[in-house]
Image (tube, rainbow, N blue to C red; front, side, top):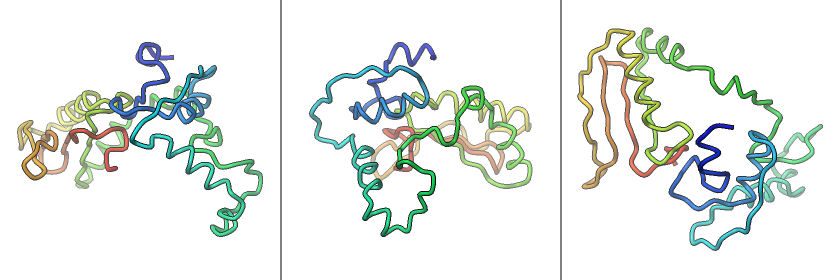
Amino acid sequence: MSQVTKETSRFVDKYDVTLDVCISSVLMQSQVLTPSPNSTEQLNRALDVCVEDETMNYLNRKDVQKAMHAQLNGVPKWTVCSSVLEYKQLDLQIPTINIVGALVKSGIPVLVYSGDQDSVIPLTGSRTLVHRLAKRLRLNATVPYRVWFQGKQVGGWTQVFGDALSFATIRGASHEAPF
């Protein structure tokens, strides 16, 4: 268990540190990634942060599974984060910089982005990865680190290296930044 996990507990959404959490969803995911979850009461909230639980219940309904022509051979029930993929802690540490570098070298433009509310893959880690890759590929900054706007509001920050490697933050976004 990482120091961050110990200090923030399972009751802070590491994927969006500004949101309330659905305690049952957090605990279900924790059972897969970290053993021995704790329990606590669910708090009232305006935003439905339990949408994952509702989705899971819906997708486990027999009529929904039949309508979706779901092939459920050997699948006891649908869950948001299951052990089917058999995540291994060491696999979570495999660096992606070589893959990103190969894409850039082959001329494929790459945009690495991070939400600024994500503590699982914080923007500082993504920015460091991009800087190291740019240095390794001998790419100079063609657009300096600067703000970008959505309408009249700051949308985040961006920086471009060469013509194929870009980094951006998305202000107010969490782990699933496009959402």
